[in-house]
Amino acid sequence: MTEITSKYADFEGLRKQAVALRREGLSVRQIRDRLKVFNNDTLHRLLAGEPAPEWTRRPRAKDELRAKARELRLQGMTYDRIEAELGCSKSSVSLWVRDLPKPEPRYSEEERLARMNAGLADLRARRDQERAQTKRIACESVGELSDRELFLAGVTLYWAEGTKDKPHSRRESLQFINSDPNVVKLYLNWLGLLGVAAERLHLRVSIHETADVAGAEEFWADLTGVPRACFKRATLKKHTPKTNRKNTGATYRGCLVIYTTKSADLYRRVEGAWYGIVLGADPATGDNVRFSRHQSPMV
Image (cartoon, rainbow, N blue to C red; front, side, top):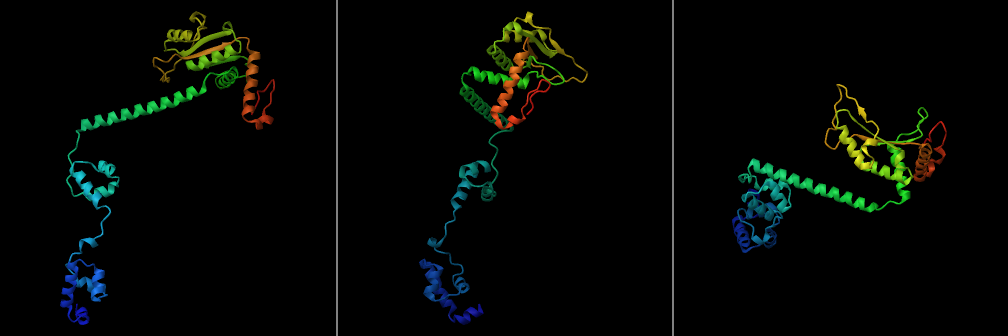
């Protein structure tokens, strides 16, 4: 203060002028230029205690959001709801309203759990609808299969699920086993395409010994159109003390085994067609595919 008063002999008179100009609405820079006082520290001492005029105040971008957040908090909203309502961060909401009392819960614990479970059920239902819609569109995009498409689908299906000939076990005949009714129906349609008569089919059920064998045979008989009396004796899967059978529901009907008699030549055609599919998908594998009486084609 001594240094200032030594430089400005009439400091108090200068202060009166500065205060008067401030009250007229001048900014610090305008007062500086008017009084020729270019030292910021001196200017602040001259204007100490005098509020800035309204027009010089810089608006804070979040003042309005802060006021709205406090208003919503007083209405009983949670941080999450305020964040969603105003589009600001939860940390900002917490900073703005942390001095306000915590609102009473809108719902009891039982009501909260009920609302949560209802929301989860709605979410699952919507997801199930989306899954079903995706599957329906994919299904409709396939359309009716041509004979060639059915033939190729059947060859691929058989090579995935049917019995194959091996060097150590000569099995040049068609035998197919599966538990999926739709897969079985596709396989039977494929056999029909190949001209296999129903009389050449030997059917039997492979099932756990504790399951409903008669019920399973009735189910497969209805599906295939072959009378149950024509089925071969069922193969029962024996249980041991360690057996932990999980497929115990009403939809469990075991597997259906379909054996085609006099099918050695047909099996060879199927095997050849399968490797034709392999080559068709990747012609570069041609040099690695070989046929032999004692060795299946290798890729």
